[in-house]
Length: 552
Image (cartoon, rainbow, N blue to C red; front, side, top):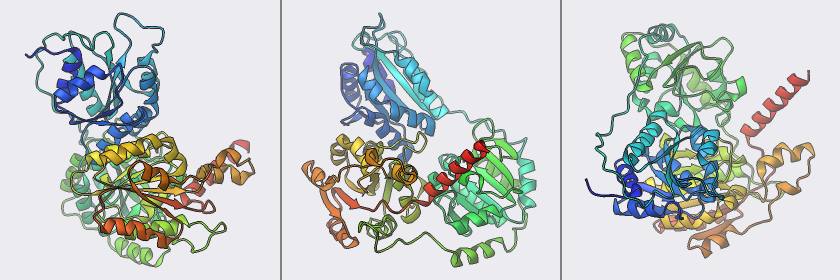
């Protein structure tokens, strides 16, 4: 075996799992980055350590392929923590390769990085000279099998030392345990007897590749279908209701509430998906199939721990010959066609700025059809999934929702842009507050993207806070942001840009697309803060009801 340093051994093993690394170079990872280059790994430099993990996270969400982020020890490591927490809570496999305190003992400036990671729910794997390769493999396979973020730490005094020879076995294929015998028979009986069945798919179903089987199951049952935002259009077809939760239409929500048997595949049934307890009717029977070991919501009546694809295939066998429910889809189609959709927005607003709903509708007509959308967190978060055509689940990368953060959008766009290989255009939707948080990595995106469009919903404020707390009479001064000319900043960094004050101003974006959509275009869209997103109204009502219940 070729003589390698500890960093070299880490890079060697990592290269059998990943092709892309994102990060910022520093004392703690300089030897690793040198070794990574020798191993043929593609390194994309970002300008803030927080972008290292966010980019690797989004790379996985957009492509299904593992990537790594890297930082130095100490402040470089702590800068990455918000993105690390988001990856843990969103169950995204990602590896953070970082420097760490010397194996011989911590220095005055060192912090307990393993303890910090544990506080976020991330496991730390510290390499040694004797087992650098084995520990690296252990860390990566833990991330993949547990669907989580891990920290791979290289002690500072070991990074450049020669690593011991190791005989490493071939990587093991991930094991999938399917508990499909205990509950699927009962699930099949419940579905066979349903008059108004509904199949709700989540990101777990998408990752399992269960879309075709669940779609066939829905057709066999005559079921309506829906998806969480992260499984958008996975079950598109006859009877598809769209997104479940605050991004869906009221008509679709009413139909979901009338289902008598609901099969939930790979969805955790978070409060936003459940419309804070109002999505499903009180008498509906809820069956959940998930790779976890227990139900994720108290509404679940029957839980089956299984891979969604395997379970759906078995249900198809068990339901062979069953007659589809009659009339349910026809009724739903009629009601969807006659019921109200999303509000189209208004031509005039109190402050003369753009209505974000009308803007979103106009943008959908302008943006290239082959698009992958990265959505940062913030008040504007629903406009893309509500108003834009997003063809596949992997074409909507929603970041910050698990940890309820903002500011990860630009960094995530870098990773998603690197993941795109089929000529798609990367579209980032961000608010002005979150965009300013991650501004350093606009330069990273411009350097990394073949074709990218940045849409900034610029209301000169932290919009969610304006609606939640400004509406209660709290001071708005800390919630306001001075009007920033993002188009000027973008041009200074090498992008094309325009300020969008009217829908007619989108002609500048259209011209850029018509010219080939090469490089990065930043659309600084000046929107009103007078329009409150439906999902936020729903959340505020639920919060007020909860407070009233406690007070009562």
